[in-house]
Image (cartoon, rainbow, N blue to C red; front, side):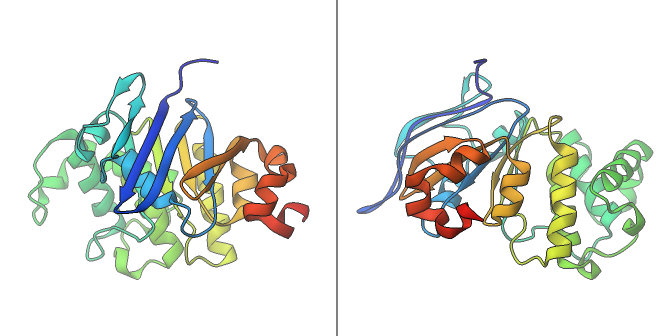
Length: 251
């Protein structure tokens, strides 16, 4: 097997007597969509925080493309190609879709970030922003204020902001939280379009979406990975059924 793009080795995160991440090992291969599932309280979001750089582990190392990034702050990880989309939408709601994306492109390129003036009138910035809008399925809404988008469209926009950093790996933390079936379907279609071109680490409770999207699934329970495999292997795993899937695995 080739070197993993993301390689977690012996990761530990403690909060007093609570061990949220318990000597966790995980490898994510480049170009794959890898999902992490588990019950509430399993430590999924804590794990994503550590990978993104928002939390420092107490023990263990994080390697990205062979480089030890354990001590790097979040913005340095973004520069190396590790971008995150949050559980809660994190967008400029008073700006249009196009301006949101243009500001994100601008931030990546290091040009002026004086938000409220036509510094973002740079045609190359806007051209890229429009391409991103098309990628995330919001091209018809480029002039719409972000606050006026439906919830699912706001989540699509947030993915677009992450994509503006040109990530090598995209961390998606429960992107379908709070969505209806139609909105979830749109986001599944977006993630499907990104598969192969961007490595994706996905945390999600929607098991139908996980089984549809992920080439590999790891199950996290009490801060430990108890199983990894493809969808069928996870469905059949008796330990996973007992700890998490239950009757869903037989559906």
